Image 1 (cartoon, rainbow, N blue to C red):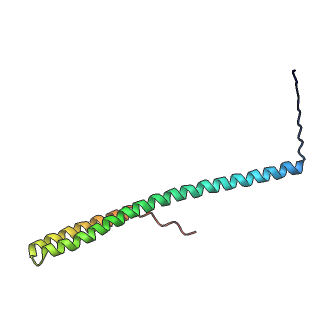
Image 2 (cartoon, rainbow, N blue to C red; image 1 turned 180 degrees about the vertical axis):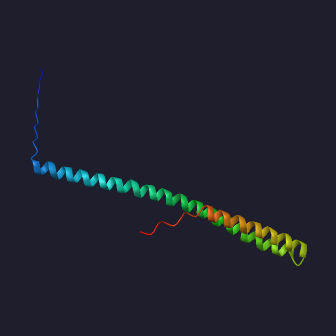
Image 3 (cartoon, rainbow, N blue to C red; image 1 turned 90 degrees about the vertical axis):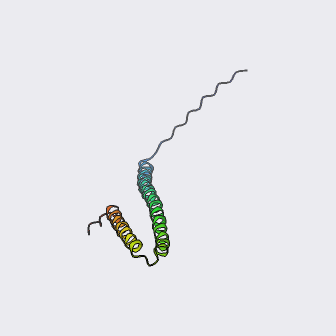
Length: 109
């Protein structure tokens, strides 16, 4: 036995429904764009947190190392002078790195 069935479905949309669908689609586009913007900002923030964590870890290592260096230098003037020069260089390097990686302040509206 062989059976053929043809089904025709016809939908007609009135202008009001079409207008509402267009409005919904426009709002979905706006939401999609906002989501993309937020996700991009979140990715940037995640990267900045990772960078800051690395910088903080480096600073902690420096501070902890400084305490050990001071203890090792004791009261020896030569060792203390070398430590002072080392600290000055570290201070200059840190200041340069902070200045180089600090974004400019946004313009005041």
